[in-house]
Length: 406
Image 1 (cartoon, rainbow, N blue to C red):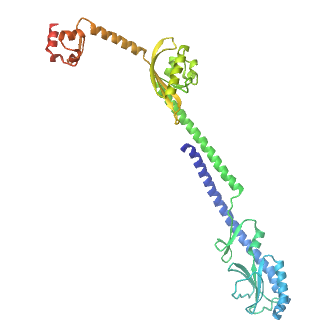
Image 2 (image 1 turned 180 degrees about the vertical axis):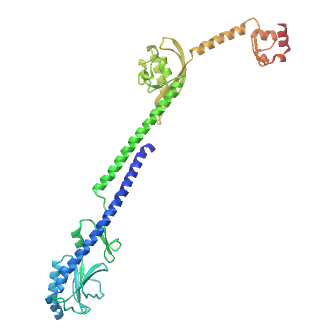
Image 3 (image 1 turned 135 degrees about the vertical axis):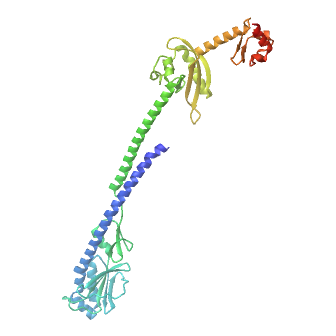
């Protein structure tokens, strides 16, 4: 599980780092754009107020209508003003500190605005409105009405929409200020190019890690197999694996040598290709018995080696079961016990001869321990074999007397 998860985690980390880099670059780029947009917006608003709005309130007819209290004429001119200038959302005319006429959105700013001097207008932000106050004068700008001015509400979004297609928010919490506490914040959107970069970074990192991990695991498996093969081939016993009742898996060199073959000439081959035909049926039957019983079996059988010699082989077959309990394979070990059985047979023959010879025979160690006595000795000394074995020669006068008489 861990080996499968590692490439994914590394790829996810790479994509995360790429995302951080993209966000940093996006933030830098967007912040720069915000500053440029704020400057352009201020310039646009300033030029609108200066080129359009002042022109309406620095005209003889407007000043005359206001001084005469002709609300209908003033209203007619202000309606043209609102229609011709989309960024305007409302307008209020104040005479001697008292509102004279108001059109459009209700302006909540009620404080008196002083507009005098070389700059006959001012732009400020107050209570959710961007406002511009301009003086009222004749065409020459020489006759300003005292405490009289026009207050104009500017719909800032309509101006910004002309300057950018980006999504934005106007807020007092935004860091990039336009007027007073009012600022602008552009949306930090990840575009298709950025998304593709993230996907590309993830895929490349994942594939690279899978390649490295596969290569590493393959090298580890090769080294492990080489180590296991060395251990198996160093053992004197014959060892082989069966994929099923008829097919060989891995075999060690001792097993292959018994049949005069190399391991690769046996591995993945069926039993009929390796064993003498006379042994095939019994071998398959024992394999199937292991699979049915799911229990190890041990037995001896006579097998013919590559030289045509009949050898006695002691075989143990052990089933390997899966999590579901089914037998996946069979591990087999064997030893050539021919020479051992011959030696044991000869030893038994010698033992029989010694036990039944008419002459007395016994074996005494250097320390005087009786290690072996035959039947004739037991009869001569009057002891059983169990009684004599383990005695020391000085423990029994009969033994001592018998030795001295000899």
